Image (cartoon, rainbow, N blue to C red; front, side, top):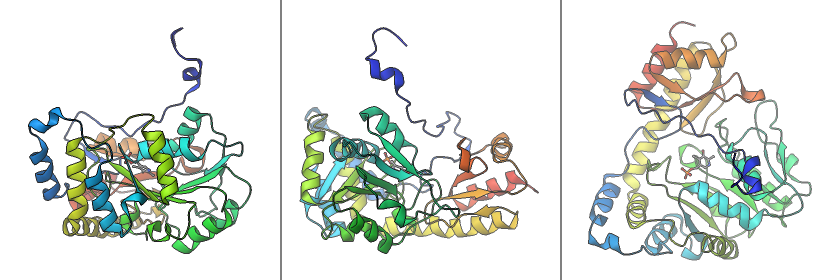
Amino acid sequence: MSKFWSPFVRDLVPYVPGEQPKLTKLVKLNTNENPYGPSPKAIEAMRAEVNDNLRLYPDPNGDQLKQAVARYYDVETSHVFLGNGSDEVLAHAYNAFFQHDKPLLFPDISYSFYPVYCGLYGIEYTAVPLDEQFQIRVEDYVGPNGGIIFPNPNAPTGCVVALGAVEQILKANPDSVVIVDEAYIDFGGKTAITLVKRYPNLLVTQTLSKSRSLAGLRVGLAVGHPDLIEALERVKNSFNSYPLDRIAIAGAAAAFDDREHFEQTCKAVIASRETLVKQLEGKGFEVLPSAANFIFARHPLHDAAALAAKVREQGVIVRHFKQQRIAQFLRISIGTPEQNQALVDALGDL
Ligand SMILES: *Cc1c(COP(=O)(O)O)cnc(C)c1O
């Protein structure tokens, strides 16, 4: 703390990202990165951008990428917003839509960045408990609120809600913006983007960090009614006109265009997930049903923190959250079959 700080900085509680160790030999199953590389066509497109043009500012609207996203999802470019990772998209969305007297609603177990933005922007929130099976209960999202946000599939549980349930929440809240954070949707859910043209209160956010394996590039997006997109553009252009650089725009657009690589790698992750679930259940773990590129599991006889420490000693990192309801769970990102096997071996006999 220092006398130079703006007063509100003292009270900020920042997000704590999963460890990014400098040691490269570790098997990293802690931050939900994709174990497979990005599209070779995306790499090629990015290499082609490394040239003298880098002296010029990029397109502030990232039109090339907006067009690729619009093509992929069969929407107009006026439905698409881009940001430096979906974390930035979410930050702008909080500012644009959630500054109200009534509290923002989100599940008690969900993305731990949600309360952090509330702290940054001075927004009240209510953490709505998931049910005993860690599922979202639609009827809990009907009261007065200043907005709603939830990940689908949820993080860190991996549980998905059906599109019908998303639609019920949208219908029950015609006066609030509902953000569906689809960071993991490509690993087993149905995107709500198909509902955007019918629900002017729906904003869907996605990222290229997980299913398109470009966490290092920092590209995220939102799809929604053009009125919502306009609000986001106003906030963005009051903050940073150029959130995406030339390399990111080209690489992300090429990644969206390469459907084959995308579908193949998603399929491989899903297949490995199913294998890993069976192996862990064979060791006595209870695993929540996952539609994501990670699983959430607990062992009835072994402390989660102790298990995380045990596998860490053998070079495998998984994520453990010191949060009341989930303190006995481990969140395990899906790796390659070899990486998953390293985890299974590190757990040993339980
Ligand atoms: C990973 C993740 C994000 C953020 O993704 P970036 O685009 O890398 O900022 C957003 N929401 C959830 C639920 C995530 O797990």
